[in-house]
Length: 254
Image: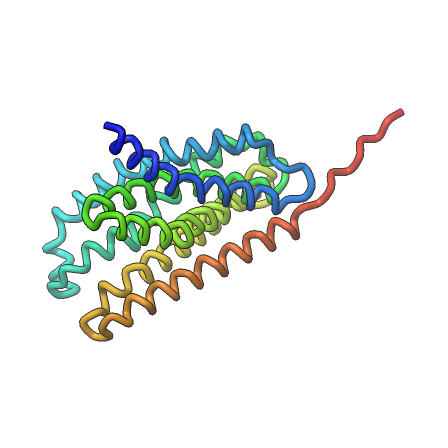
């Protein structure tokens, strides 16, 4: 019983602690009028629980519907067992997951008084989503490959998938903030978030797709490319938050 509790605690800590630290880091990118932790934690938990649940349900339904019509796809694309996986990973998952995370940003719409707030709340819901997703992947890795696989999965996902979810959702958050403030539409930002998510997922799948042609180096190519997407996205996100951050004008008295 004690061993089980220690293992469960290790999985939860490995999944959630990096995401919480990233949330503090991104939140503190803003120098003026930083968002209260209470609000950020609420959005983080929405992403970790509600957004994940919604995404799992819709992805399951869509993947089943897709599988029922897979023969029709094979007629046009040729019989390739990676096609349904690619459709799920690079099309269905990004569209569904970014929409599910967007609901968490909408919960904080009253706090979107500045454009950068949308990016920060977007990152918060994305990191919550990533924490639960990482917990599931790391649990599977531990069950299938033992402690070594668990540690490798935890490290890789903490520096890749966690930041990908934060960055992609911050793009959507910027779009939602623009809509709330009457500065334009949000759809192009949603598609931008989906595009970033899709590109990352494709590169994360690169090794499995091209191992036969390129050998083991295909996995390294995919990992490096995925990390480039993530770190470039994070840098641009923080630069954008800093460029939008302005002190609020003092209220006039008298």
